[in-house]
Image (cartoon, rainbow, N blue to C red; front, side):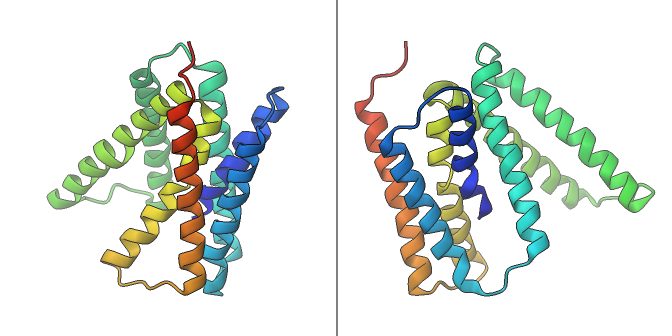
Length: 193
């Protein structure tokens, strides 16, 4: 759920780059952060190591959004996806070998899961992600990204038997309102030439 903090990272990097954040973007960011707090704070079982790892991921994720828009605007989304996912696969393969010290055989259904998640949850998701940055910019993509938190909670409710308090429902609603406001603004804003 800490991914929902990535809009703050992206807006900060855009500010450093000399771009101004609109008051509506800052208001939506405030809604997202308040919604995120209400969604995760009431659980009372937060791991500090998990929070630091999540924030580290959020920082690199936000930086990735910014760099795609600033430095890779002319590179096709497919090319970026192939390079990023290949680098990640090599890194995770090395991490696997360091952790286990040897190759542990994976059953055939395990390979099916690897291929499925590699194609749909990784490659296709990265392609859509990079394409959205190129279409609407890193700031707007980052502000839509908290929808991922809402989907995560929805899947946890449906498939893992999790339940939410009223405060957590309010937090999720604020994130949805923010995403709705972004969609409305995108619908009335002309596409960049």
